[in-house]
Length: 616
Image 1 (spheres, one colour):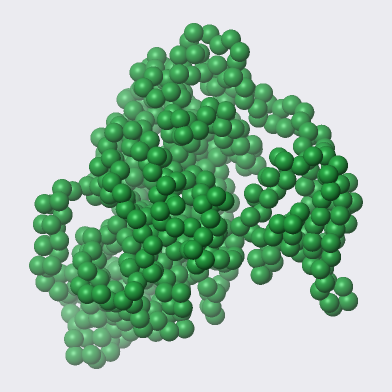
Image 2: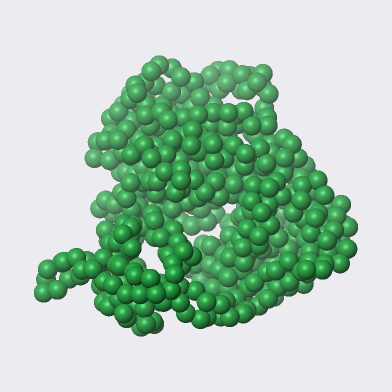
């Protein structure tokens, strides 16, 4: 929420002046952590209701999946002002009914973290950036606040004052309003639960750096257990990117502060995934431990995406997000806008401001096309609205592929039909002016609003290809910019063997399917159940697999020697075995190729220049 310094100070003063009966006062003592559990005490706003319900979030914005944070709460108790216990009934995994009658004074409970399994966790793993990590041994706590704190039904919009007691040598990095009380206590302030849930905090032994970029103060905080990556490394990787993003957004950022909270894992994670979760003023990252030389581009690419969420959904969102229901959420139809356009912008800014070249941009689009092919053609608005249902939940990741391609097509539609006067960023700025942080649009009216701001052809595109299930008109749209689309053509590549791999319980990489194994895999002598530990002398770990395979396919000469070390079980004993074969080049049919036309027309050249050259 953008405010002047004076306004921010006024709000701080106001939040201190609230009577206790009008706000939540939360106490979290990280120094009292035991058995991976943190004690939480909440002094509640006053209410005369006979009964009150305390809610923990079932779903939170940005995750598009059910998390059920109530399952991480135990030993739930309620008390009156004299310390007498009040009757508590568990209504569901995320709801507790408390006998009140005006007596409720405080609630206490313990919170387990979501990054480690425990009895009762279940098989619904919470993606790490959207969860909580309690690691007292290494003095690091990842605190998505919705994983620690809930609200009383009907009192979600009361303000919060959160006191966190922490070790004297740790620092709480966040974008929330903060007051340092002492070397071991901080106070955080939020206008209501929505604002609090949008403000993650990471406590760790400090490795932080901050810089002013455009009009915003940008903080980077990194926890790297082996000191492989520093906050300064990250800032070096993202500084020019953020400068380009500020130009891309018109020279000013719609926030006055932003925090990158980055946790590196030395080993596997419970979800087996890596990535980030966006918030309005910050983003939380869970990434494999590696130095800037190996993980720098990953940080840069993910940061490019997450930072653009300051546009949407922060400044452009539907009622389903603006009035988010944490217990029984209704999902918006417009994930193509929140995630797809955001992903497209994270690529487009880099070519437009010369952070990489047009050829790299075309390769990114090709990759999006190839991955999007793995998903069925469905209405994107229907998929989005029904994303919590099993049939559509598995399609979610397509928002980063087809969703980004929707953004690309929309950008080129606007450039073509405005003769280069308008583009997607122009549209996003206009929508942000129309709505902004405080006003939500109606899901069913958005396409009409966009058509009224632009052209009938744009409205028809949205109805046909986003609401409808018609495949995107990729060849036609790219031809407007002098780019030829080739559906498929023969190619040659170094093969990895066409083997199926999976993760073991210990996050090791195991061969689990040899049904389509080719001659290279057969020459190596893989057996199902082999755990690959080394590939050409490199440790074959989850954090490095993609890079190792990519380097192998790109830099290997056909016929060169390949060695693979596997762990193989025989007669109840596990032994290491070295496999050897010669690299094999195979022929295949590659799909989705893009090539710049050698002699584009004047009109095509103009569209291309407007599309990928800043100021054109």
